Structure formats: C-alpha cells, structure tokens
Image (tube, rainbow, N blue to C red; front, side, top):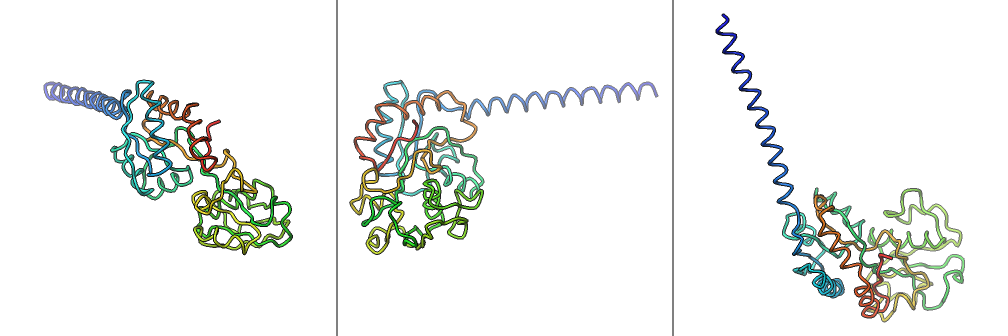
Length: 280
C-alpha cells in the first residue's frame, strides 16, 4: 500500500512539473509571437489610395528617409483593400480614412485596427450661389444634403457645430434629418446624390458638398464655402496600424515624419485648401 502511494505521488509530481513546463513554454511562445509581430524600425510598408493621398505620402516618404526610415508605398484604387491588407499583415500601416469609416470597417470585418495620428481633412463645405453668409439665408431656405448616410450625417454635424440646428443627443456622427430636434430657421433639407449637388446648386439656397465634387465644379473650399468643416471634425483622416503595434517605436517615427512642417507646407501649397493639415 505504501509502495502504491509512493508511485501515485511520483506520477502527481511529474504531472505538476509537466504542467509548469507547458505554462512556461506557452508564455515563452507568446513573448516570441509578440516580438515577431513588432514592426521593423528601419522599413515600413504603407498603403494609401491613388491621387492626393498618394501625393502626400510620397512627400512623407522623402521626409522619413531623412530620418533613417524607409517606406515602401503601395497604392490602392478602393477603400476596402488597404484595411484588409493591413489586417492580414501585408501592410504595416495605411493612410487614407477617417475614424467613423474605420470603426465601421472594424465592426463589419471583425478586425482590430487603430488610429495613431491625424493627417489631413478633406473639408466638406456649405456653398451658395446667392448668399455670402449662412445667416443671410431666408426662413425656410432649401438646403441640399448628400443622400448617403455617412455624408448626410456629416453635413448635419457641420450645421449643428455652426449653430444652425440641434441634433438628438448622441447622434452627431450618425444622424439623419429625422434626428433634428431644433431648426430655428426652418431649413428645408433636400437629400440628393452627392455627385449631382454642384449641378443643382443654382436651384437651392445652399448645399453641403464633398471636397472632391466641389473641386470638380471649380469651387475652392477655403475661399468659396460659407461654412467650412473645421479640423476638430471627427472626419479628419488618420494613420492606421494594427492595434498590437500602436506602441512600436517606429510608429511614433512614422507619425512624426507625417506631421512634419515640410509635409504641411507641401499640402498647403499643392492643394490650396482642398486638403487641410489637421494635426495642429
């Protein structure tokens, strides 16, 4: 009986030691995995979209190189693939989107991507062919709004921030015209296809127009808008990385390279107010 108890004790001890060994190995494996997922401090692969975002990132590449950081740029023609590629590890970061878009992407695709630094704002503006000041609009004025949920709520947010309407609490970033609580000027909101609004501006008292469509219509946001979205808007664009890499030293180096006076001067000179540096 004593011999049996001794054998059982030995088996139990071996089991405990094995379990401890498994825990240590698991802990070591996690540490190794964490180290392997860390970004290189010498080179990053960054995704962006074709056009202005690409032009700005090319300038960032120059500035980063001066600080010893090599950036390989990958250019995409849509808004989904840069996030998909980042989540799958084909990119180290991307630069092209605002946070409401990112939040929705994370929710829809079960990804874990985070913003790390402001970049630029493509300012939505309210324009009018007849009035130079929104205060001059008559009671019941016809106001054109983009009919898609994202840009429609963005336009309402701009009008609320300017003090012309009040939205239901908590509806700042996902509001519809049904969420307007107070409308002192009795503004008549007309929802239209965003791309068509500039062509219909003459039939409206004023309208909210996205920057790209405003520019196509010959409008300069910083000169022609009677209300211009401010850089504290939730719709500013960001540099984005996988959440696990937020504290990697190279991420700070990337943000610093983008938020550089040389890059700021390039944006202001090249885009004449159609894009605004938003990190000040």
